[in-house]
Length: 280
Image (cartoon, rainbow, N blue to C red):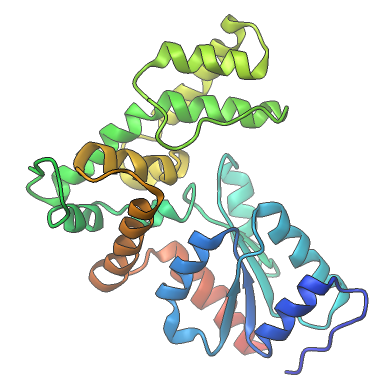
């Protein structure tokens, strides 16, 4: 099918559609997502074109503009779950006419951090003294790290809901000092300490209820934070951006080659995007 572009399209989107050509266009949030999806589905790149306009809002804006102002119907968006509810996620995945899909897990990193993949890479990675003997123990350790991150993630959730533009806690922030996280949250939000602590406690309870197994935990724990904590816990190399990106790429490869992609990802790409497009 030839893509005709209507004049009202922005120059940036016009360029994206030109590069996509007759392939299905899938918009992703960022460069890291782009690298992962292109590696996982490199055999399908003759049928599908991934592009990262930068951020969730740009994905939604570009998707809406393309559907409204061009004749290209084969355009989709995939965004992180972040702090969205089960209802929001399920609605995006169950609507047969949907073009925007929300991941069931918090972010794409959560699909890289499968216990076996993490264990497989860490056991041959420069480490302090890696003594995790199998992937089942690795899973327990990952759940413990998720629990350690609980307060920090809860604080970011509260900051997110406040919608004041307050600064989030970034990857690598010291997660063990609960009192400090609460104090800093109150300061960033310019709110009463007791009020902020109560809000954080409420989120901690929700998060704790999900920490029974990996698939549930990964719906509420930010994989970017968890990835950094894994490297801090188990490796001896400096935690530079380059090192983090390198480890992410190792996990991307291992998940595909030795485990297989999670059904969430396969379903969105193979069943909803490639398969649905083939029916048109």
